[in-house]
Length: 390
Image (cartoon, rainbow, N blue to C red):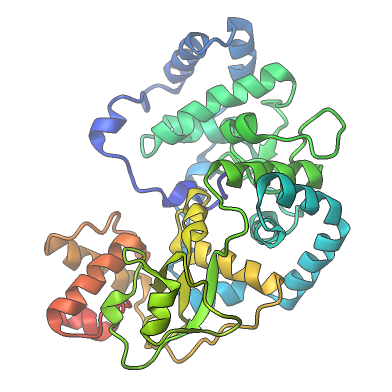
């Protein structure tokens, strides 16, 4: 399963990896090559030819791929943009409406209903906005483009398999710009591997059947390593005297050890035995959370730190948690300032990933290392003052 945000946020693959995946060149020749490779995957020639017959390159897909400014927003702004009382109320209404489906998901896959409700809300607003891009065109366009062909080319052959089963129409199947389909936005390969008939009609219809979509999502999360009965995130309070260099996903301690360092949960007692990491999305003066192993499964769904944290937190709100304490975070950087910071960090030898103006995990690690070098509180939150010092 991949959200419609996922594809644009993957780190570009090394050139050595891209060299093994055909891309670019004449689009007609590219389609011919897909036809040949499809048969090597066991797809019969007639199926491949019929699938590719109407496929066209869609420039709008590439424009959508490049328009991801929303991820430059800091956590507080981003989460307030996505979370509303209306979304919470509709989520709780859907929890009641599909209660027996969620009971099955929790029994079979061990995935808390609020996890899936949060994804369902963010991906398609509970099924209302599923995308209007022709899926076959989107996948072929992105596979032809040489940024991430290793992600999208296999999805074309998976879509062909769905087509052969009668579960995909290259002329009419629509979804998100990055090729995801249905209420919880699954790529064709994920549908093949995890698609589940939740309503018992003999078909897997992720666009029109909430039970199918939710059961498929639960199976997907389980296959990605979701651990039944374990928490995923706790909002916490951290003492002012804390050693901020202990924050970040790279450091894990038991809940009991964090408690000994003065950290307390706002809504309940900390999970004492599980490994956990302290994350400060906007530094030491902003919100604070402990995250557990299940939190890391979210990154198999979406690579955006801000999206993942917002989805994980929203799931707790659906379960009755209070509104997080936003604190008084220091002013952050604009998108252009963040790019300048990434360029300067890269010049110092840090691997920050793409120069994209987004505070991702690699940039956070580099910021924290520079804060330590400069004798600043190492909370991984970049500020104009830090930018001026680097």
